[in-house]
Image (cartoon, rainbow, N blue to C red; front, side, top):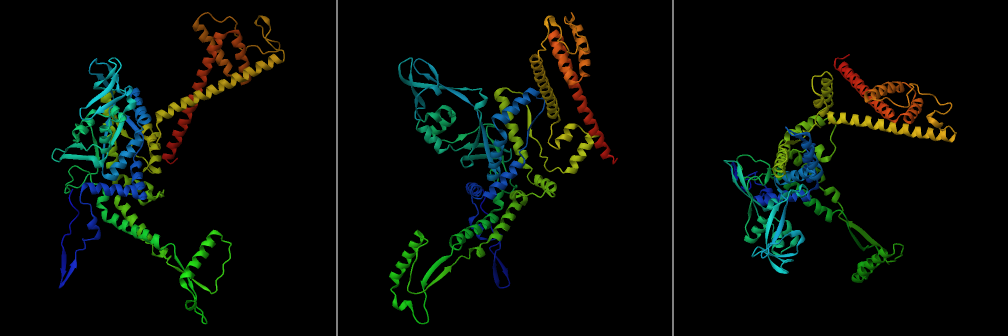
Length: 597
């Protein structure tokens, strides 16, 4: 990376005087001179400035919306992808952390950890065992495992073999440390090779033969530890998200974080905070002094041993701290002074606030966003401007999401799919949403387009309506059954049980449709009679309908089941018709509003 910006001229002359270059500032001396120092600066700002971190996190999470699957993928395959991405990988959380890496460092390196099973083979009898169920030692020098062979009854050298595991639950997203990454970049072809400096902690664990690490550590990493070399990644193993720089900056393929172009503003704010901290240490709490007070007639300094006086005063203060209600005497008056304490008037709070506001504005973060108090009236226009300021974030997140799905489909043999984050809709104003709903009512646009503006999936809502209707019918049926059982118990308690021979009890109303006890002989006749009986029952009051159903069940269970099913279908049809009628009324009302009627 190039060094800090150099002054245009070392001096500017005006007549006989020499003026210093205005571009030579104190911050120029602290300007980062290497990519490593740039990354450390970004890391310091992220870890030590809560306002800086929170504002950038809000920028990333503004674009994290619902995951959508498009393309020729079947519905079953879409649900598989969505369940795996949302429930297992928690992909929105992963995208948030990757976005934090990219917006902080200007770079984010990530890979997929492909699960495998490592088997150990006895060098003598070739007995194979899973390494997870084996106690072993490992020599990094010879790259061999040593374990007890139950067949040979002694410890022997074991070879290993790694088998690809098809366990979806063991997939892991690796976020590589930017300080350990190196690149070889060809800006003509636009390609890069990524090289990883093996983490010293991993080297020490592998060298010590730590079984926990060796069970799941890829063999390429172990080989790099043994050879003390870096690890070069092949193909598209690493996905690199980066902040592009202008063409004049030789960045060797690295992304340049935005905070670098704002270094002087960051330096200015940090300078103010440093002095503000010094003021808080020395000027907030006043320095209190007690001294003998001279009077016109006596001077305590002429007749008092000040060394013993100071110790006596200090002892008096200690006694007062132990017992605030204690009494103390002194032979002459004292003078009390409070020195300092003017920190509130010296603190550069307005300068810090203005500097922070300028920094956030230069970074493209609205003031209302990093302060968390967006003005609702100005939100639509401000959000549209904000979205156009950060177009690279949704592009990079969608690119990474597509790379992840492609990798999963290649690994597990799933269907190819096109995936993306749902476009942000928060910037749409109420007027536009109302217009879309009116166009839908006039059948100029689809329900999918209109409902998407308010975050509603019409297919999901239709399924929910059907589900709610079914639940309502189920509750109604349960209530009717409970009421029927209650009536039966009351009838039994009053001695109104059914008479022998299948006859109805005295005083019980007869079947309005005269259903016979021995039902019809063919299924068609059963269905036809069930329709007729259901139509008659639907016109009866609810109490009478229940009693008739009870009697019908006693007389003919087959006909009772068919009638119950037919009534359920009629109730569902009536509910659906009611919903359609409400929709038609809503459509007519919106159409009338659109035409001004």
